[in-house]
Amino acid sequence: MLTMLIISITTLFIALVVMLLSTFLAKKTIMDREKNSPYECGFDPKGSARLPFSLRFFLIAVIFLIFDVEITLLLPIASTLTSTNIFSWFYTSLLFLLILLLGLYYEWHQGALNWS
Image (tube, rainbow, N blue to C red; front, side, top):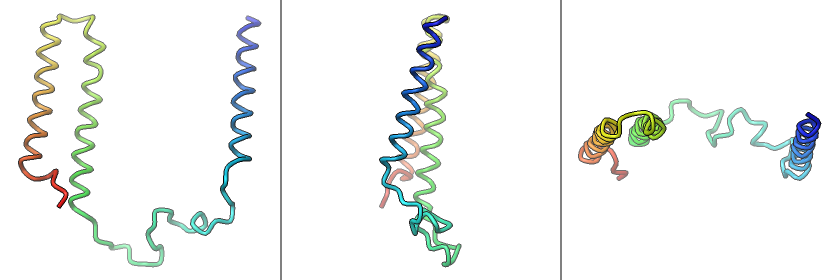
């Protein structure tokens, strides 16, 4: 019980020291022109809000999100390896990867991955 208390206090002390050091050593100024502007993304806040948006960038972002979600669905398959039948696990994983690769090939064939 005493060792857990000492470890907790030591961890909190180290975290506090690191946070204080990063606060004092950071090279940020409070009165920064970009920080005082309403947008920090590089857009002119006084300009037109109807700027042209790259449709190609939007398609690449959507494709990235689709594959990112599919990867998060693929990761739990590895943890179920020990609790399932190896052949059903293998065929399910293979089918999932095959669908993923066919989708990637379709997007590639349609030209959605070309950035020109």
